[in-house]
Amino acid sequence: MNGQKTIFITGTSSGLGKLTAKYFAENGWNVAATMRTPEKETELTAYDNIRIFKLDVTDTTQVKIAAEQAIEAFGKIDVVVNNAGMGTYGALELAKEEDIDWQFAVNTRGPINVIRGFLPHFRANGGGMFINISSFMGITTAVPLGSLYNMSKFALEGLIEGLYYELKPLNIELRLIEQGGSKGNSFRESIVWNEHPEITAYDELTNKLQSIMAGADESQLDDPMEIVNVIHGLATGENKSFRNVIGATGNQLMEMRKSMPIEDYMSAMQSFF
Ligand SMILES: NC(=O)c1ccc[n+]([C@@H]2O[C@H](COP(=O)([O-])OP(=O)(O)OC[C@H]3O[C@@H](n4cnc5c(N)ncnc54)[C@H](OP(=O)(O)O)[C@@H]3O)[C@@H](O)[C@H]2O)c1
Image (cartoon, rainbow, N blue to C red; front, side):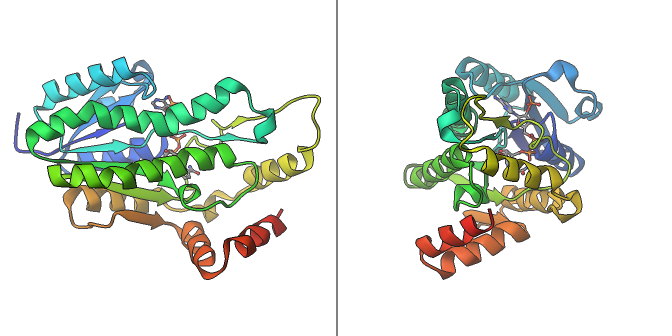
């Protein structure tokens, strides 16, 4: 359509996805901003170079349609950001079957769906890039009662690292961002908690984690613009790092994790709770 590059982003109704969409639009990119409820969007609609498409990443038919619509609107997609995600926390024993499946469906199957949706286009173009928003919870454990979220992001990390070998020969690049908690998003409010009225064995740990999360001071969280800048550096090719751990918490945990045996690391983590 024109000489501008185009980025396709999932989960742009709030937080990092919305900020990324705005930043790229303000820096000369075309943006295909996708979300589950476009009818509610009022901010991204103000940008001439942002087009909004409906997309629930768990729905392969919607992925197909959103990819076709974005390609038709902009001619070519250069970069796809798998940003949509949510957290399911609480004891595994208490989780509802559908919540276990949903955690995997959004955070892991979602990126699989989106990657598969764009591979034909990237192959036809002779290349492209997938930037995947993971978490430090994708490369290390850090809190109790986060096993399902850990599972979804560890699986995402394995998927993306494993894909490198088949996509590199096709000039299709893969990148991972391991972010910690950042300011100004809806992540904490949208957490699904595993609970059961009759099982109290996990109550103490659950109450402790919930009060730590509720009491987390926004000022101690990372600046999301730091993450947006890394996404921009990856998209433009200035930064070629495969894994990008962002933020004080994630980097401290990774240092700690590398400096001691896993048994010592887990025991140290447990002592905080
Ligand atoms: N904030 C943190 O503490 C933190 C830490 C590490 C990693 N991350 C990761 O960072 C990414 C961005 O999250 P955020 O911090 O910006 O939180 P956020 O404000 O909650 O954003 C998550 C986005 O994902 C969307 N989403 C959820 N389920 C979806 C689905 N099935 N299909 C399409 N979109 C869906 C949400 O849209 P709806 O409005 O429709 O729900 C929302 O736009 C996520 O992958 C998250 O796992 C976050």
